[in-house]
Every structure is written in C-alpha cells, then in structure tokens.
Amino acid sequence: MHELSIIYSILETAEQEVQRHGEDSMVETIELEIGELAGVEISSLEFLWPAAVAGTILEKAVCNIIRPPGKASCGSCGHVFGIKQYFDPCPQCGSHWNEIINGEELRIKSLTITCAQPAVAVATDTN
Ligand SMILES: [Zn+2]
Image (cartoon, rainbow, N blue to C red; front, side):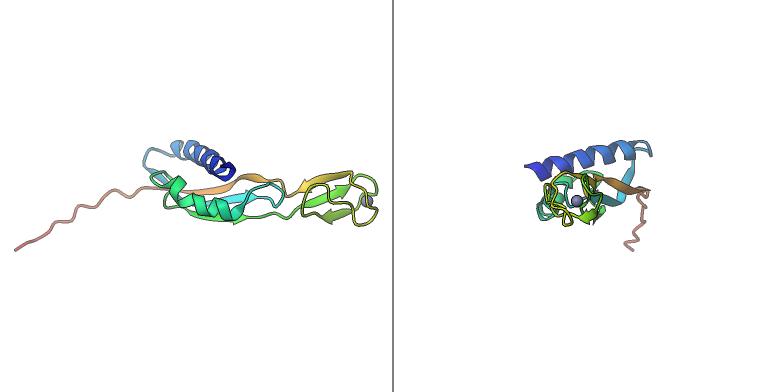
C-alpha cells in the first residue's frame, strides 16, 4: 500500500536523524508536511500509522500533519490560484498550462528528539 511505504520512508529518515543523537534517543514529536497535491490519503496514513511504527523510535511520537494547500501559477496569464488537483484550469483564462508552486510537499518538517530517561531503581521496603 502506498501510504504504508510513505510511513516506512518517514521512519527511515527519522531513524537516521535519531542515530546522530545517540542510541537511546526517541522521537517525542514529528511534524509532517504533506501537501494537498502530494497524493497521500491522510486517513489511510493515520489508520496505518500506529501499527507501522509500533516498536520503533516513532512509537510514542505525537504526529502532527501540516497540509499546505495546492497553489498554481498560470503559464498563460500569470494568475496565481488555489488548485485542488492537477490539470485544474486557470479560473481567469481557462489555460491548463499551470505551474504548481505549492501543495506537493511530502517531508518531515521537524522532529523533537529526547534522550530516554535512565530507569530509576526503586527500593521496595517490604517490611
Ligand atoms: Zn490564466
């Protein structure tokens, strides 16, 4: 499934980041930027996420998804307009010759990495 492979590639990138911070680090929050034109089904991604990241550094991470809206610039008249899908015509002149300038993002915007706390040994007095 498409969304699953996206999660794995996010995970791979996150793991490389975390490794640079040391073995015991975990991801606390992850901020993803997924444009409206990126072709990602957010509901599927959210549905698959918990199982896909179980047992990984992302298991406890809070995932925030930012969705930049689609925006295109008309190649004929230069009009800049919001676009919901590729090949939407320019509302001003009807041209299909558009350059996408926003909304194709698919990347990790930021990661908050924490070092795992050492386990605290608690002495139990059974008296
Ligand atoms: Zn136009």
